[in-house]
Length: 164
Image (cartoon, rainbow, N blue to C red):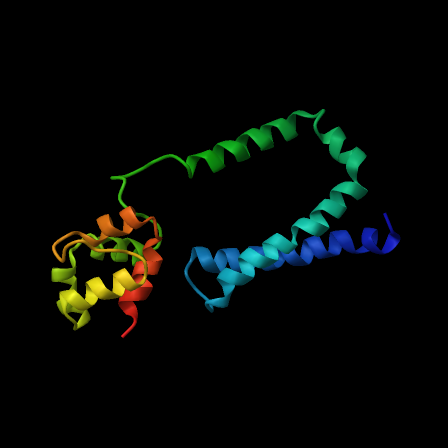
């Protein structure tokens, strides 16, 4: 490995980890500018390169860690912690950010009930969704059924309904 890459791998890991740490804490507590989400995702992806260079530079020492008990314990605990987030909990309804759960509940209604909230007619709601590739067979059909039948993401339906 070139000495330049070797010299910069650990400093970049440190810098990008701090960015990831600060943006991750801000995201967890729902504070800070909206740019934190993209910053956290993209710069965490960039972190992969210096991490790989760091592993390459320290490969023997890294392999030696697998001979010690703490590495096994740390890997098992990390895998268990990650698995806990994948367990189905609650009622099975949409989770995530409250705004997404709210929009999912709204889309459970038919066009005939949603139209007055949007200040439009059921026919217009049906037309907007159909134009977005989400055919609605009847204004009394729950929109979520039409969305699922179309195979389109809910966000595409929301975008079509949000346009004036």
